[in-house]
Image 1: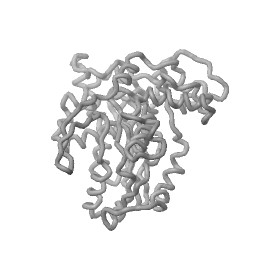
Image 2: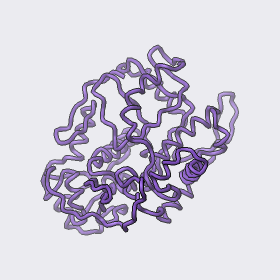
Image 3: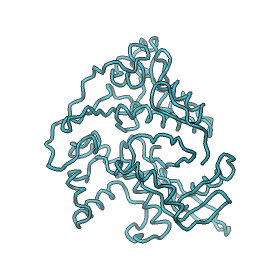
Image 4: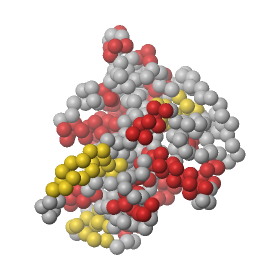
Length: 380
């Protein structure tokens, strides 16, 4: 795609070609005098705890990787989405929530200050940890990005790491947790809301079809039409239309790796690709995928994965190969250019290829080159 030169935030490494969105980022993450949509003013802090948002659970905990001897820290996202991100990733993660809110505002006239917009909640100054204040650019009511962090890390029960096992740096803040909380397991067992609705097909017939609340079909053809109408797009290459966008459910936390797998599985299912017999019916759940991965290890496939993770069944350890992101990112164009294509327009190229599994830490930076990559992120 052809795009303008990326603009840089004067306070952090964030870049974006959209000047308006960059302005929103600065106002949100680096507010003047600390006045941010997620932070209370000095006057508001005197009102009391009655105005604290329902999703706020007290002090934002930190998780440190003591075994690895590093200073990496994970912080629970203050919006209550369930995600724990590193200090370096927090601002870009909040940008995703901000972009989501802006999109809803544009499409539905969504009120970002209403009760449904979690980022607009009032956070009492007393429960805002110094570490989180620093990351958001607010400490003592001023913009001080280099102030020292005084918050103590929340201590997790120490568990001895086996030889060859990765740590919190790679597996996330719950690398030493023996199993996920029962409430979270129930969320995953219940799964997304599934409804049945009438749909008119091209032949004029009306049939009942299932609608899964966190799955969206038909987005690739829609994106192709948008690219066709966008005069700034000189050339676009898209993956197969036989893939569904699948996003995370509220408060489920860091299961992005599994949601990415589900999107690949949706391609296998909807295109009747090789191996589709292993995925009958609906998209396999996160718990089912954990069982399948463990079974593959039992059968001798990629057995070092069990050594590195210590097992994943019933846990919320991170999975994926984020270390391969840079290499895969660079060969995206080659991947699409080397395959059989069909065009929905002279400059819009529709392939029958599955999407590439790109597991990355945080939000990928904008490329300074003329080409851009389109990511389907499970964050929702």
